Image (cartoon, rainbow, N blue to C red; front, top):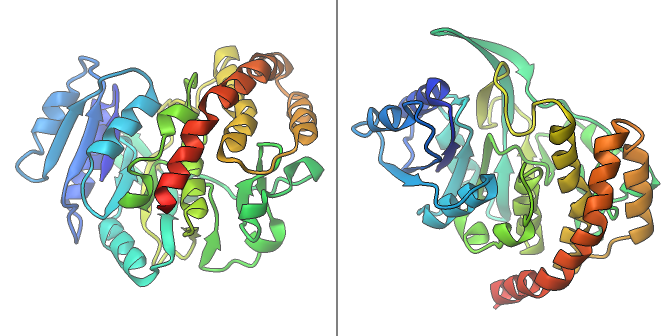
Length: 326
């Protein structure tokens, strides 16, 4: 399993402690650490006698670099992801193992994420979803053809989309590529050599990287699912009173989030998927009505940069899928 951490010594110990309490312990815990002089190394070493920890010092910069390094160095048939400020329920690992064993056609799974409040040494667990289901629709949010039948998907404009008709069925399993990096798992052979660092050139927030891992699973011929039944879903509690890459405020924050939203159109084209340039432009104009200056600025910035990345890296991405089929 994999944890990426930076300046989270205070919360990291809760995450690692929850792994020690698993009914089925992970075979290994790969931790990619960006040194911050906050004592994270000492926290990690304090668990060395209870968990099989492989600590890696991040070699480059940025979250995508850390995730790519961690994925490449992880072993085992399944790679689970847990945030450094999340707490896994005791059956978290065992539930993932069981779900992958019983669903051989599934390549990626995400479970339930609930809220937790950390107040000093006290942790308050809430029965409230960390992510709420949202229904986003419109002519610019129609599903990519390969994701037909998915409740949550990427659209032909590059934006996110969700089907009310599918999500309101309230089924135990829903096909989805909208995973949360704080709580997800993949069959390792499906993501080991995935060119995540190529797709995310220029990104500072790594926004939607989880969804590209899941989309890759679908293109490789497997299903990606979200488990919504509390009894069988792998569940984690995520702290809500902590800042993160995607939960801060300000111009820079919104600019770089929309960098990933806007350039996503070109990422999807690198796969060779059928996208709509017209809907891409209209979609960006529509979402720029709110927070206009940072979002529209990011759109203009990525308009040509994304095209450049597409021309330069599309062969690398498509060669990966050709090699995977062989």
